[in-house]
Length: 575
Ligand code: WT7
Image 1 (cartoon, rainbow, N blue to C red):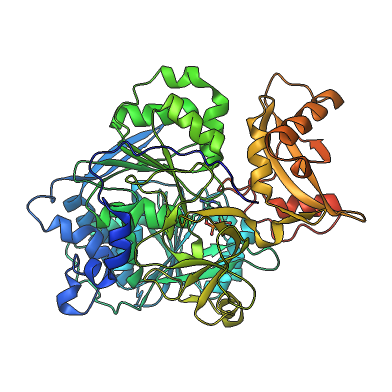
Image 2: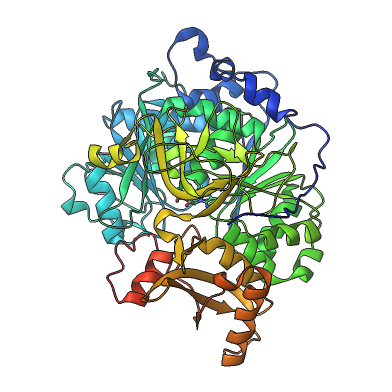
C-alpha cells in the first residue's frame, strides 16, 4: 500500500553519535569499529573481557557503576571492578568442575545479579551460554537442554523441579543460587563456591568465530531453533550501542528485556557494557508505577523497551505518568513488533520523547534497521539500515524491487553479528540463505523513496483480500487508535470470493462492553481512517489475545483458532 502523505517527526537532539547518516553510510567500514577493542592487536578475543575487564582495568571506569540492580526485595550496585571480580570467581567455579571451552552452560533463573556474574564467568572461560527465560515450563526446558546438550545449568531451587535432570544424560552439573543444606553429587551451592573461588582468572582467549551464545527462538512448526552466535557479534553490539542507542559516558541505561530473549543479551548486556555505560536491571513483574519509579529513581536517560509495554503504559493512562519525574529521559527506543504510530504520538505527548523503532531478529544478533536520533522519524516506519549493512526488498528470485513494492525484507550477507548456525540443524540454517548473497528475514516490507523501511507482516501473515495486499499491522494500528480498543490481532480468513477477508480479534479497554454496535463503529473507524478494503469484515471480541512472553501477538495462533487447526509450538506463549 502506498503511503501518500507521510507524517514526520523532526529531529530534536543536538549532538548525536551518528550526526550524518548519509555520510557515514557511504564511508563506514566495520574495520573502524573493531579498533575499539584490545584484540585488534592480539588477534584473540573474549567478549566478556571487552565488556567488563577492559573498563575494570581503566582508571576512568574501574569504579564507575556498571550494574544497578533492583527488584521489590533487593537493591544492589556493582562497579566494573566488582563485576570483573564476581565473573572471575564464577569462571573459576566452572573450571573447577571441569567445564571447558565450547561446553554449553545454560542459565535458567530470574534476573538477579547472579545471572549476570554467571553469564560473564561462563563466557570468560570460553563456554557457550544458553539463557532460558524463567517462565519456561518443563517441556520447553527439556527441548532446549536436550538439543544443546548442556553440560552445566545455573538455576534456583524454585525452578529446579522444571528441569528433568534424569532425562538429560549430558547434563552433569547443577549450580543452585540460593541452595539450602547438603547437596547431592553434581549439585553445587553458588554462593559457597563463589566464596571459595579465586578472584583472579586466566581468561580463555578465543577466536572471533568461536561460540558465545545460543538463543532458542520458536518456529511456527516443530521444535524451537537454537540460534548460535559467536564472539564477533560484539562489534555490532558495540557500534549499534553508539549509533542507535546513542550511548554517552554519563548515560544511565535501562533495557526492559530479560536475557532469556536476545534483546536482553545483545542490548541488556553487551551493547551497554561494551560501551562502558551504567546499566539498570529491574527484576520482578511489570507494573506502570514500578516502571516509572525505576526511571525516576535511577534517573534513566536511555530507555529501550517494546511496543507491548508501551501499549500497556498507554492503557494505564496519562495520570500515572504525571505522578513521576521522568525528565531524565533523553532517548527512548522500541523493538520486537510493529510500533504503532498512535503509540509514538502518545509518547510525544506524555514523555515529550520520540520513540525510536528498531528492527532486528534473534537470528540477526543485533539491530539492522533503525530510527536514529539525528534522523526524522516517520511514524510506522522501522527506519533505515545501519551504516555497513545493506537491506533491500527482493522478490523470490532475488531481484531487488523498486520503492513501494512489497516483498521479502532481505539483508546482504554477511554482517558482524549474523548467526553462524542453527544448532544441529544445518537445513534450517540454509533456508535463510536460499537466495545467494542474501539473508531472507521472513518479514514482508516495502521501502519508500527515501530508503525508510515499512514493515508489513511476517511473510505468511500478509493478507490478500479482493486482489489487494493488506499488512495486518496497518489494520491493527488503526484498530488500537479507536478509544475502545486495547489490543488487536488481525488475520486473513479464507473466503471463496475475496481470497481472504480480514478478521480482527479485539480486546477491549476496561469500561467498554462488547456489542454489535461497537463492532460496527470500530469497522467504520478503520474504513474511514485506512481504507474500505482494509476494514475487518469480521470482528471477534476476546478478553485477552495470545501473545509470546516477549509480547508479540501470535497471529498464527489466532489463525489456528479460526481454522480449527493445531496451534503448533506454544512454548513461548505467555500464560
Ligand atoms: C521478528 C523477530 C530482536 C528483537 C526481538 C524480536 C518482528 C522485530 C520489529 C519492528 C516490526 C518487528 C519481525 C521479526 N520485529 N522488530 N521494529 N517492527 N516487527 O526478536 O523474537 O527473533 O522476532 O520480530 O517479525 O522478524 P524475535
